[in-house]
Image 1 (cartoon, rainbow, N blue to C red):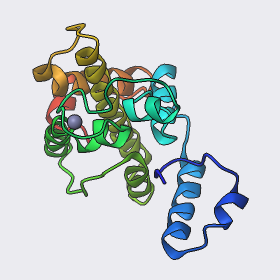
Image 2 (spheres, rainbow, N blue to C red):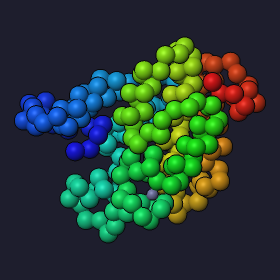
Image 3 (cartoon, rainbow, N blue to C red):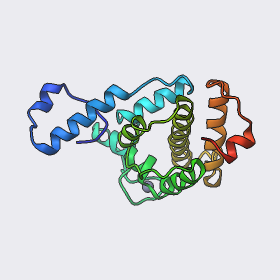
Image 4 (cartoon, rainbow, N blue to C red):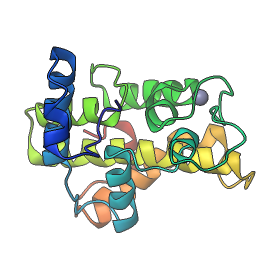
Length: 196
Ligand SMILES: [Zn+2]
């Protein structure tokens, strides 16, 4: 069972009343309830986040599981693990390195999340000002968004985004979102040195 998805009616889940499944069901329902539309983010990024939260990204494993013929299900970045959304956005070596840099940038000692649902549960229990929450949500959204764009760049050999540009792109996109849509009054240099 994939975390972060609610693909079946609750009654179907009730047939799976073993402890592990019950815990996962509760978690899925919590994630469903907490998936939100963020006004700070552009519409296409909100749609992207929704697809991440409900495992609807067209990853290779998702395409394959829908019965479509696909030559490979391996990650296009590391060529090692199966390409799922949790792998490409959180667990791939490329993602791990980017998250390490983001952690240093935002200066928060947080857990290493393995998927979107873990992150969002942590985020909702993070008790800070709404301004700070808006900033961090934009940064995490930008990180996943850029990682997915990079995956597509490699997959389709478009050369639109280079690996060494990923972190700077995350800083730039999140800055544009919080200052434009989020109406945050902060300079680029302030954002780059202390985003939270
Ligand atoms: Zn990988």
